[in-house]
Length: 210
Ligand code: AP5
Ligand code: MG
Image (cartoon, rainbow, N blue to C red; front, side, top):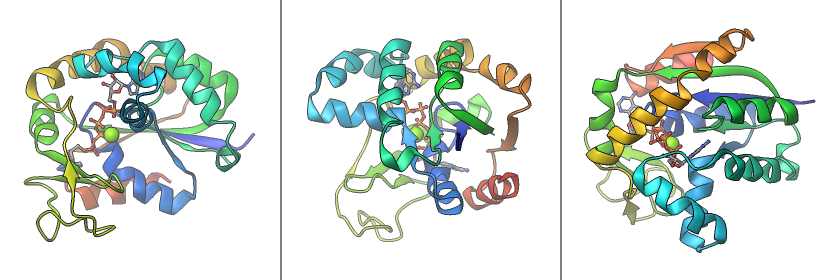
């Protein structure tokens, strides 16, 4: 079975920011459950409607919904050589389900202290066309309002990127997701990188792991 990579870390750690570099190195497609849920929300599908309340409140979407989404995604042809999971798994139940359907070669955890997270999330914006991730202060577009990657001129902000929701997301991370670190450590799959440094430095640390 081809092996997949898990990108792990709290909200705002830089998973989406680092994913492009990892895709470029490994050729594995990025599978972000957050991006998939947001796309379903925009399309107004049953999945989107079910996920909406949880996401806006900063709570995790139920495991059975997420596991079903991943099972379906992994049947697509581009996933046959493994994928880069971004934001999945987020609970022990999700990790156990994943172990049944895919082989994981490494879990790369981007570690960032809680004190940095609110500023990162509240300053985030993304390209409305290609979803490239930017930040008002830490990583702005080179020309205001023009995407560096695709030239699109419309940017968007996420509905859950506000201080109150971020605190709920952080609490969900510590209660439900952080215990996965030990789960993967016991399986010798866990590698931590310091996410509290410049974006290029984090990329270099991840490249060294890969
Ligand atoms: P999801 O979309 O996965 O959000 P998240 O995990 O909260 O993580 P983020 O996307 O907010 O952060 P990131 O680590 O990608 O950081 P980014 O690179 O953007 O999930 C959203 C919701 O969907 C969840 O709350 C839940 O409801 C639901 N959901 C999704 N998956 C689920 C699952 N498996 N189970 C259950 N529910 C699920 O960077 C953040 C900002 O910081 C950017 O502005 C960026 O420019 C900046 N930045 C990045 N790196 C640096 C750096 N090194 N220095 C300075 N700034 C930086
Ligand atoms: Mg993300």
